[in-house]
Image (cartoon, rainbow, N blue to C red; front, side):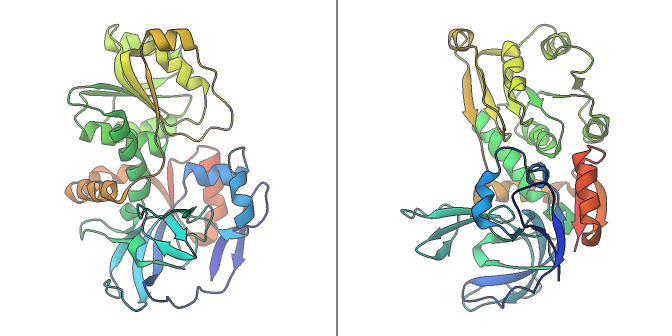
Length: 343
């Protein structure tokens, strides 16, 4: 079968023919992948930017951690039916050589991520623990199922930020996670959501299709000037970051209210220089969010089931897996917002 593989610690991926995975053992299923998204993290690993060296001990591997499909085969003790439609949670916990559902409190358990430190979904088939295969609602098709993972990451960050009814929220970064942050902040009751980016017209277009009119291009003027002009001089209640660019955090602090929360969800290749005196005097709260819990996936799938077409504008390109490297270049050059590959 064709797979997109990271084989060396350097730029690029390889499209290679590899054997199909073995039949599932007890407690496992084999998933026929029907849709898999190219994530910003995938692009960074493709480019081999700082922050992805943790992958080296696990290379070579098949990438892809945003995917959905159907159960193709099941091992003993599995309750999922053959043909069941599922989204796949990419987090694996291994303790004493066994796989366990994320959240299983095992001393010394090793955390792996499909597509980054274990084989993932840029292939036709993948064998996984049955607990990582979450049934999709009938109204949620495979390509929307591939959005569950990034939307759950965004929802987790919104929960960490404690977005409340009527809040004004500033999202930093208009990419897929930023779009998810905006959507989940709105679902949490935010009264207004502003999204900032730099010279990123394709993603701003997606945000407008999703119903977000307050798109701020910091190529036009400084972030603080534009945010305060939009809010009538009032600071925002919560900032949610998904840029991977540390200066965006310090640029946003001046528009955050006293005791306001800033959640960092991006992966950063450089350290943060923080103006601590102002940070302390304003009692700003800096928090981090990474990954997502199973309970959050349930919430996200309920939102998708309620209004599936409200999320579909996030997907701008659909390509066969054989054109996957083209999809990576589209994403890398920001000519696409979300690329879905179809194995």
